[in-house]
Image (cartoon, rainbow, N blue to C red; front, top):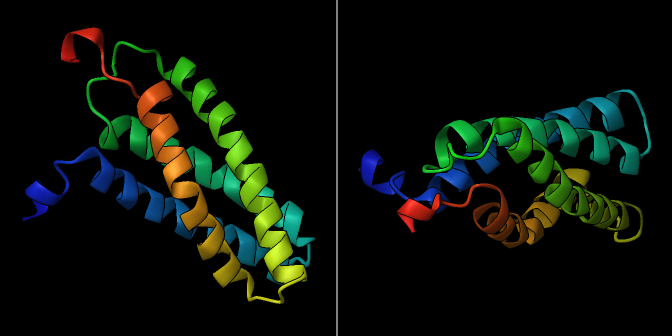
Length: 135
């Protein structure tokens, strides 16, 4: 069963994203709850740290047939495409916490779901695209 489920890039992408979500949440708790930094700054820092962890997982496990592109080039593209997503999710978390008065963990879940389609589409089309011989 494991092999069948994780034979698909999207399932592996979701698994790596779940790990990234946990990383983001832990950093958010540390910065917002414990250190009392503003929610916007806390979310941006948490998302960037999560982004680095998800890039590593996506690069080495989730997507196959992309070794023809250098890791440095993929990381730059990944960070650039995810940068807009980080800004949008950070704004959404801030609005949901400050104006809708939601718990920041729930706001993070909502914003993460909103960014899922965006990130998967950009990852498959721009960063981890298959080599021409695998198309």
